[in-house]
Length: 159
Image (cartoon, rainbow, N blue to C red; front, side, top):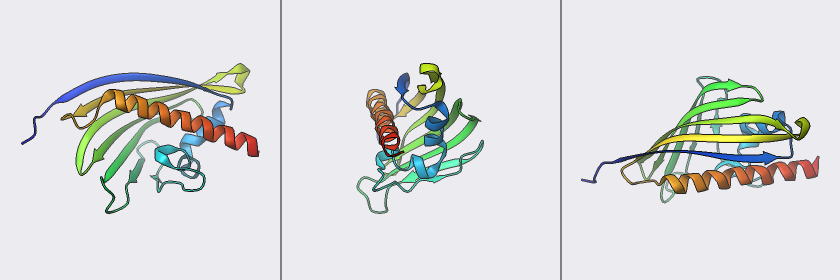
């Protein structure tokens, strides 16, 4: 039987984007947009995101059946203030085992006189049984936010 443990960790990541808060918020709120930058999705190969963006709504992303290793992401929205804030909890599983449970907030603040956005992402996580690592999560989330920035830049270039 594996040794049971819980590691608690909190991290905050900030990014500034050259797009107004309403546009950056929409990239999180619209499943057609979010599927193109979140979780490895691209414009050419968006992920299969099942998303009900409302307070109490669920968001899920599961790996394809038979993928090695199988993974699962399931979130529930607890607070949504359009163009300002999203608060949600999420579970992450890998290979059929729950690896973490997290509470996250995404805050959108005007920057550069309102033409840009200062995004603040904060996560409080419980990492279970040594199956996930807080520093890897922070780095992965930072990479995801960098991908959001690249996606926003591509959208601005084609607008």
